[in-house]
Image (cartoon, rainbow, N blue to C red; front, side, top):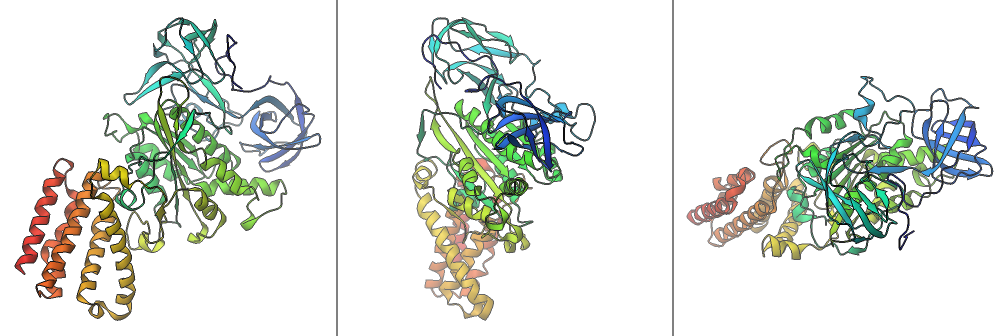
Length: 598
């Protein structure tokens, strides 16, 4: 609810719209895995946070039946007994937002894993509740307002530097309108008041309910791509800033490696990486690599603009659901500051499995494959929080949240509910193919099954090259034609094809092997800027034209397709970024000369 006039702002750290904290203490009457029932909580509402048992386990009310409150517990309930107390907090599950988020490693409920592991224990202590953000670090607050300025929700109060990459902007909290009566520049902790509005202090930290989307001034059309650095995605299936994409694929098809590549090399300002129910060794690789990777824009460690949320497969299943909402809330927080944020969710299938387990414990009527009937609604509520927006307040600024969700269908079956429901919501479908992965073709994106609904050709034609869209259409058509010819070759052999078809087959091979294949473990090839990508496509297109010209002169098709210069197409990925155009021109000239000399 928005307050106007000289009203009292919410205190630092308060949750927008939260009610008075209750002091109800109930009693556990039933335990079924992560689902616990309690009585004597008369003032408790849905999605209120509770503390369960003598260990004060974190939980959330998900159902109320008469005088019985049913809650999901985000921690291991082993040892919990009937009769233990349940304390109602009267407030929803929230994220604590402020300086210090970047570079942090959090669990599904935003507890900092660095603090939890400081005592040397391998496992998280039951009921542990450390501060979400460091209370002792002093940040250099640089005010952007003066005494007497009138401010509204979302307005810029000032900023603090957060690493070398990001200027963390402190905004007027939601629900506050008034006149600045005091400004305190200089070092301050996140709880110290830095600005007074109508005489009431405002600190740098905020609290926000995880399940509530943050407000915006307006939603904007999606017209700018998020450059991923992956050639097959940027060329054939681009995703817009503020859009959404899903990566379905069976075991071993490279979902996690692709998501990590997007996190490392995409043009997002901020990356929020959520490891939801994945294996611990995969997240360990992320934790080891990101601090060592240099940000190409600043040279600082990539971790300085990354937030990692680790909720591995051996952690309590109910916390998986919270981890997705923690990630999207943090992403929206930086979006409101005017940044482009990419959120990687790996994987939404594990999140769906958590919904299914809790639903079965609640004895709800199952839908397809045992998932709850509200699966589609929950997925829609998550993906709809993506978008490009005009932010609240002044100065005017825009931001975006792009969601990339991995899906792990059992046996690679894309007809299962998580994939099908995600398919209806996402604007990009990057289908990973088990057959391609077995051929060691990575990224194993199937170009015949994938699609993008974002019309971004106009941006690429304007910013990268005017021939981008015709070359993109040519490449897509050539790959489709080559796929159809491969079926004939597998039955009758390549000699059964006409000469023109054999050229199509050779160009399709160049597109597949020399352009679309990309190594995440090669420093030069791991990320490809769109300028190099366009130059590579141009060379392959010109090679096809030179081959057709030689065929029209009566040159034997075998000599054309076996020309040694065509092997140079596979070395295009090694081109240095500073002379791509020159390298492309030289290779095109060599191909034309050799074809004309045949």
